[in-house]
Amino acid sequence: MASVQDLKRRIRSVRNTRKITRALELVAAAKLRRAQTRIESMRPYAETMQELIAGVGRAASSVRLPLLEQREQVESVLIVALTGDRGLAGAFNSQVLRRAFAAERRLTGEGARVRWLVVGKKGRSTLTFRRRALDGEFTGFMDKPVYADAQAVAHRAAELFTSGEVDRVVLVYNTFVSALTQRVTEQDVLPISADVLETDEDERRLDALRGDFIFEPEPEEILARLLPVYLETQLYRAILESAASFQAAQMTAMRNASKNAGELIDRLTLSMNRARQAEITQEILEVVAGAEALTT
Image (cartoon, rainbow, N blue to C red; front, side):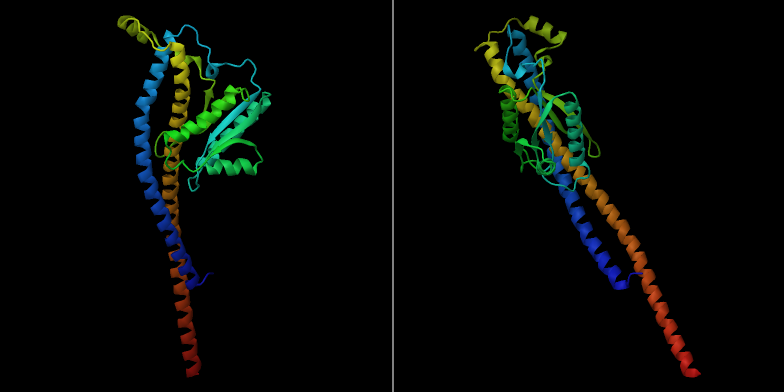
């Protein structure tokens, strides 16, 4: 049985750890609120961008752009994994990588060659440890991503796709659902689906009422400029979702850690009290035995 002094040291150590986990929980909660605000601000822009592309796509007579090219035979696939730069977030990083490796096994079974592009230090270290060659790595911004970060990732993915080095680009990331729930999402981002250029019947009726539009420059040229921006927007939205999911996962993990630390402190305190009581009882027995020895 551990001594009273040993138990006191353990209790002191666990209390110090609980202070750290509580601080991390509060920091993550503050960052999560800001991340949620950024996602909400991003949504109207993303929706307007999609409407704009659909409107220009309807006006274009024939659309043959590199980012829309559907390859008949998919020989190489690029997996873009969005992970965090730090740990202490429960299963946040591991579930993204687990899904990415599952996609790799499935694509390899279909005869495709898998290539990797990773965002986040945790993903980079795992893929490097597993000896995967990386076509690009982007780290250091997942705590507070900006649009320029998404542009860099989108530019690299588009470069590999348009040059013919990869025939498809798959994005794997955590979608923010709530502070307690993050859903792993696997999304095809390249080639851009032709459905983006389509619209529903109500929009067509509105266009008919509004009349014809005059485009300057031509709709095809406008669309060629908009599609890369659309790709950047999709990636930026995914990065914001991943950043919010990381803060939510860390907040939940640190809250559970603080709770477990409290329960451990209670158990150690009970053990310490029992050890102290045993020591006192032993001392009393020794005193009584000494007194009896003196009286005999």
